[in-house]
Image 1 (cartoon, one colour):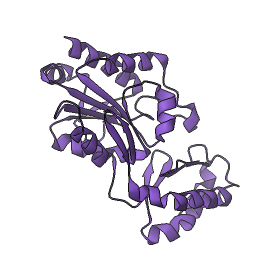
Image 2 (cartoon, rainbow, N blue to C red; image 1 turned 180 degrees about the vertical axis):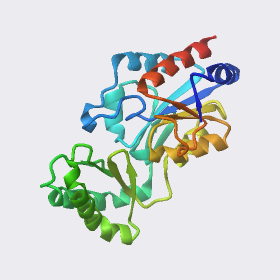
Image 3 (cartoon, rainbow, N blue to C red; image 1 turned 90 degrees about the vertical axis):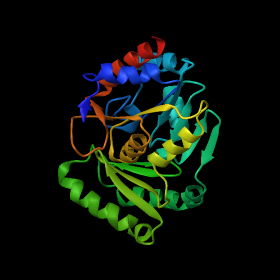
Image 4 (cartoon, rainbow, N blue to C red; image 1 turned 60 degrees about the vertical axis):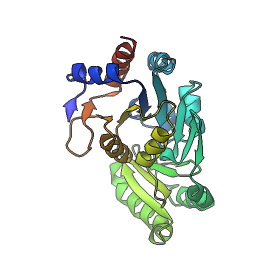
Length: 264
C-alpha cells in the first residue's frame, strides 16, 4: 500500500479528470476514532462540515457505509440527501436506492433471540457490550479484562453454535468485536456494486475508505472497477487496499484535499 497523502498529486489528477465521483466512507475507525463504547463515537463538527461541503458538490455523490444501523448513521452524521448503508450494506437508502436484503429480514427474529441468549449468558462478564442492530448484532469486548477473554470466547461460540452450524449466521472478528450477520451472500462489496449500478451519472470514479475486516470485500470490488480503495490504519499487507491513511485525522485532511480537487 502507498500512503495516500504522499501520492496525492497522482490521485488528484484522477479526481479532476473524473466526470463524477462516488465517495463511500465507513464510520467507526474511519470518520471517527475507535472508542471504548460504540455510543462514544461522535463525528466532529469539523468533519461534518467538510462532509456537508462535499455533499453539496454537483460532481460528487456521498455515502456512509457501516456496520451500524441506518437509523444510527442518520442520527450521527445528520446530512440530508446522501446515501446511508447500514448493517454492512444489508440496508441502503438514498440517491434513488431503497434496499433491504430480504433473506436477512426473514432471519431478524432469530438474531433477536440470539441477542437475548447472549445477553443472559454474558451478563456476569464486565465490559461485554452486545448490540442488537436488527439485521445483525455485535459483541464488543474492548472493555473486558484480559483474564475473562477466554470465558467470553467460549461462551460466545457455545451460544452461537446452533445457528452457526445450521448455516443461519456468519461470524466475523473485527477490532475487539464479533460481528454476527445472516449467512446470506451479501457484503460491503456487493452493497457498493449496487450503489455504483444505481449511480446518478453512469459509472463514477468510486473511492472507498474503511478500516476493518468487513471492509475488505469493498476494497476488492473497488479495485476491480478501477476505483480508489483506502485503508485507514497502520500500513499492513493484509488489506487489499491500494492506499492507506494512518488515522481519522488524516481522513479529515484527505476530505478537504478531495473537495479542493473537485472545485479546481
